[in-house]
Length: 592
Ligand SMILES: Nc1ncnc2c1ncn2[C@@H]1O[C@H](COP(=O)(O)OP(=O)(O)OP(=O)(O)O)[C@@H](O)[C@H]1O
Image 1 (cartoon, rainbow, N blue to C red):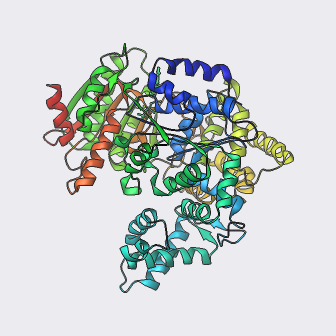
Image 2: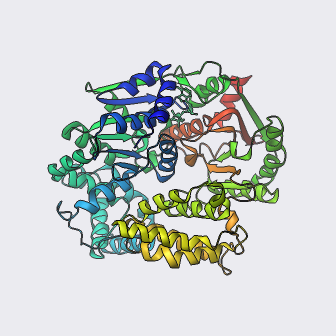
Image 3: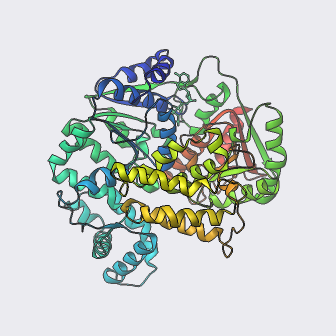
């Protein structure tokens, strides 16, 4: 399972850090609380490899839950380097995917969740239709139903027990709307994304045997990014770990909590760390960033946490650039001058070592346009990306595209990886060994004759969709939303779409290999690291927004801190002349 030599090598690095080593050696519940770049994820992945090799005997395994598919992808990559791959013993994924694949799909019927055998996951259009009907049925006035969407989601996520007085009395109108909305979905045999953890929590609460069944399969639960995972996961942890007896290994940083609007409650992590039956480890060293960046990061956060750069770290530099003009003009300056200067100053620096991070996707449009005009390949991770990069299906298709564009020759990615990840993706349709063999054959048939970066992407996608993805994917409850994402992307690349003429190589990141400049929203940059980071659009009114209340101001600051601390050796803060964000002003004063 784990590659013993690889995880022992990683463990040897932890040995020099007393906190990391204590976490690695922990025997009971353990929580690692630490700042950016302190090696939380490194400690977690090394520990998980060790657990699988030394502590948890086959066929039992370990479940690892993280915030979103992007974080799961990062973890999968790091765990693969230690020889750990998701399989029957190892779960790596989001709390939604854990709820759906480990609890709802196998146990919905026996747990009495009241779902039909062939229930599905609602698409966006189905969710909207259910909400419109529910608003019409329960509300006295006819407003725009979609105005309720956000409030409804936050009510569902913040009060889990439907039998409680709190649920009925905090906002009776909203409680009624949620119940009507869910009834509309159930009438159609559907659940939605938020239902997944809610139904899982309900099943675990009402059926104690289910907790024991999960304990039998996964004696250890590993959680990354705990601060952002919200109340439902916390309830699962309380039941599974502190009642049923699963062992918990979790890492997090309340200072990096940036999803409060989505139901994250960083104090849950703090409360957990104060329990007497939990060993809490705090890490102080930052292995990622240069000394000056680490010192400035406490100014960015507005709190002194006593973090220090690791021994021998380079100095690192923080630059502030006041730039004239609107964002398109500023973006051209960034790409033509600032980026080129940074690259010239660091021989060996590649585009993939650099990221441009911004507070909103529409600001990223300017940077994407400027990069395209300058012929610089980019990979974009925000709401305006060509497709959501967090989509597991699209991630797999990217891999397939890379294989077709030379990966087959270079062994990167290996065909076996496409098969393994495809099997996980279509797990509901690929069960026995025969089906695995059939999938292998169909995948090679589907890809072998289309190994050419200059092929039209649209035709490549349509072929794969019709021959392989639809026949397998339509039988997978967990893929309904993903298939909709793919269909939308196929439409965009068609001759009638807004991105006609795209080539397969573009999907594979060809034309620079995988050496692409990262363009990302600040939110999506969480957990990542780059040699050079440009924070673009750091203006008053954007970060924080003008109408920010106290909590939103605090969350905006944490978002700024997350972006700032992605950098290893250079951070560039770019703002409009005369309109610097208060966070930039504070940093400038510190730097003087
Ligand atoms: N003991 C160590 N020795 C050397 N390098 C380390 C050590 N621990 C961590 N690192 C390196 O430090 C960097 C940051 O580690 P990691 O990504 O695990 O931090 P993190 O705490 O999860 O960060 P963040 O919260 O910002 O996402 C990585 O490049 C990692 O390999």
